[in-house]
Length: 198
Image (cartoon, rainbow, N blue to C red; front, side, top):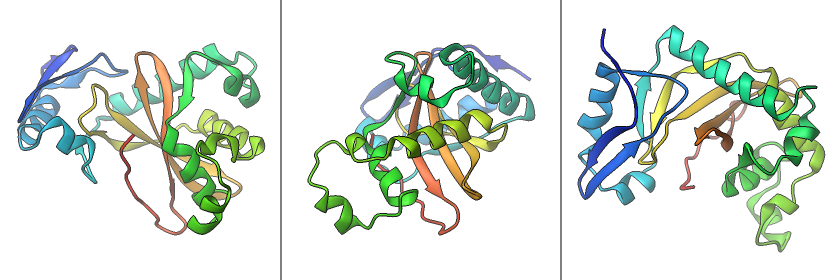
């Protein structure tokens, strides 16, 4: 079993994307799978695609992903306080579209209700308690799905299984340059699953 250290050059139709250092070391077979699929599209094609390349994770890799998430959360808040994490200017963030998904999938607003809010940046429309609950559920999660996804970015996405108000949600994150970014919320209750460009 060959382990590949990163950064890893990933050839796409119009160039090369460097897959930067991540929380796990990829196996050669995993890198080969990304490369085999990546060459089929341009980087823009991958960034706008509905789905990326899914890479099965080993049990050890899943443990490593949970471990790096836990380490980052511990650094952000030694007391494990979600409010403290949300106040961090460095080391944590939400992708822009994640706020809209939170309004839809957790606060359960319709598209019309969201548009009626009349704000260009949805981060200001989400209730602070909702953000605290999302962060708390991610802090508590010890389960990551058995795959990572590559979508044309220099990092992989990981899907954590979280519980929020007795509902199971998947919270998709990446570790971009040592920063934990929440990119997407998936409501398993309704099966609502839409990928966006971020």
